[in-house]
Length: 531
Image (cartoon, rainbow, N blue to C red; front, side, top):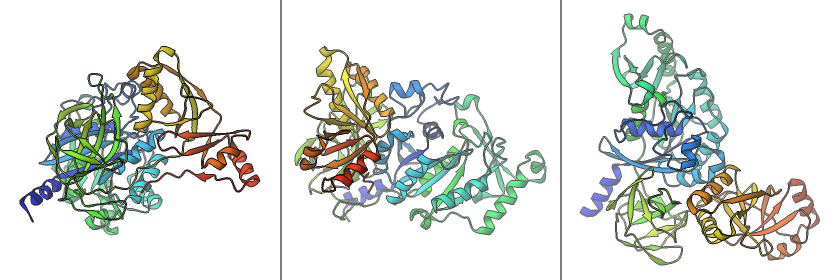
């Protein structure tokens, strides 16, 4: 093995690339920030009293996110802790932005699944876990908000096992019921309890004190007796962490805490380093394994424009899959076969950026002014191959969009093209409607809000939406278009990103009647590709 090959593999072993996934309002962005706080890369938390009093968490860079206290786009944060480089991808929790989250999951090696102690597994969490299972991603579970009233810990473990078909193996265990959080027991040091000293509003890390469990302490901490009984039960059923089953996706190590108070977060951060896998070889579309120490290859998993008002540019987020990335190298954009220069490359921390000279497998690099790149594209240094494609979801909401000021038509067209390139919405066109009022397709209506907000604030092209009655889309062909275009309650449009013809229907009844009347017409389901 060459010295260069050894260096690449050594650096890859130092990387942990992971995403945080959850249902909306489980505390995902708060946890993301708490992890950065414990790694000492920020000095004070912005999420000090939940959504209402939030100053704006580090990963929420869009003005709309800071105003409404929600995450509607993914963000990359890179920082070091314990001599390990962490690439943390914060994902949007809202179901309307599932497509963005699914793309992020194609770029990580592990996921932290965040659960609300009171609500347990929720619909969006279940969907995202299914994607993790499909991608064979190991999952670490963090049960959040234990400082508020909630369910019993054993009940939550039962739900994880029954509904996900995965064995929960608690690494930490709460002392005190949800809402009366007295401390944590680390099962690897079960003769001690960790007590926490909270700081004002959780703005800084909570103090920790490990104390031997003594009889006087049991009298002082009322929850220690019940915790001891529950820990004994876990011991009897063998609910112990096993690295092999965890990496195989058959078990999930479980941690308890309260992210808004920074309690239990350090233990989770240590677990990401100690338990989560380092980058490994990735398979191409043809099933070939690309060695870590081979030539450079990278997967574009996200494209975002105008992240910072001071930098009106377009950034492509690239996961380094193999080899070494060096700023200034010329790569091949496999989709077009054209060379791609990397003169401007950044390491990201939310919307903050610093130039990066070199990156290794697992790292996320932001390539600036990447107008030719789209989510799912592959970049290589030499050999041409592609990584599996990104998911494309079937839109369920449709609306026409038009600029309110005709003099801003040029900015409007540029903004629509940018939103389509990023995958914020699907843009559908037809000769009948023309380019002045394209149709936007979305998985959820909040995507429309983001589109209008960005058109106005980033492109200075205020616009309005007119909702359409369609709720279903099916793929068709030219022959189908000719017949369907003359049928009441149906409209055929062209999807800008790939030229596919989509037939839009108002409801299942209309689709079913047409399918029965004209079975020869091509009407294929649009199924999200998650492989």
